[in-house]
Length: 469
Figure 1 (spheres, one colour):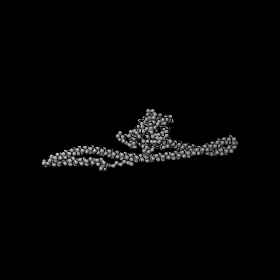
Figure 2 (tube, one colour):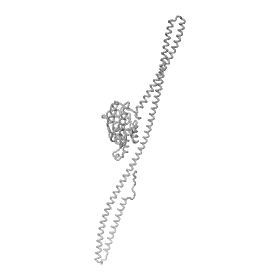
Figure 3 (cartoon, helix red, strand yellow):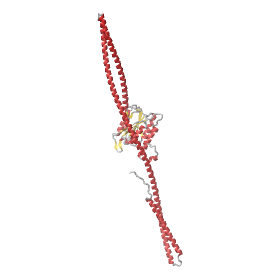
Figure 4 (cartoon, one colour):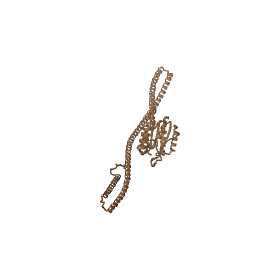
């Protein structure tokens, strides 16, 4: 239950002690006044007593006066002692009252701060919920786009198959036309041979002329057939060429769609020529939660890094930065490494496999080290992580950080990192912003996904969350 602070009532134990002390002082003063009055009364009686009284009476009165003085002295000493005790108690009560008032003030201040932190946390939760909803909407849009691309690819493949069948039919028709043309050419050759034979052997000029006329008619008819077949053949060739051009265009379009589809990793566009891979090696990268080890989690992360490297069609140079409580270069002293295909992938994955994750998550230092390469051509960053930052610069003063709860410190770390990345490291001036893509692993809370998604969205990138095995 939440502690409730109640204001002090008018009458409390320490106020009762104060009242008792004051009452004791009043009683003491009253007793002193009474004794003094009695003494004055007795002195007056002695002074006004009849001189004729006997010496015994005087001695008795003197003895009584001496005894009264003794009692007065004792009472006075006792009262003085009681007064000192009461003063000590009063001082202690006053000190307790001051301490209680100070504690009450501190409790009131803490309550006000707690209310402010609660309001800030509520605002963060609302923002995280909104980001999560936007992330889900973006995921649905990407799934719809992927489905549309698949449908388009299927339609293009169906159209390609139809055109291939049509081309094969036209090629078959062309073959038939070639065969018919060859037959017509053979018939024409036969007719020419007959014509020459008739001209040579015929003795009857009239019969020869008549036969020659029939041969000429057959020859003209054959030539007409050959001309028609040649025209149809040319038309079919032109149609085949057009269809082949259309088919080539469709193939190019299909290849482009296929390349576009294959050049994405779970919705993240695989782009970049000079790329930095920023990899979280904090202790959580080998755990499912604080108490449960995940034997296959870190090897899965290493395999994913290798897959992303292989999927980048334009990759020329790269660098790898690993981070936990601090950040460092995995290869060399931070210079660009030439990408050599599978050789580079094996070098990176072998070094990552030999790394044992452990420690905090100081993403601020990792990004600071990463963007030192912007001046030498950095164009894309791929971030592999599973959680929110837990250490690094917060943008707060030491006094503000001293008593800050862990959840509010994490929120301050994330907010300061995003602001610095957007306004300082990746500020768009005379050069294009660096694209930051994020790949999250087995994250437990929506705040993690919302943070990585917002980090990517604010820097022209994409985010994908890898589910648990």
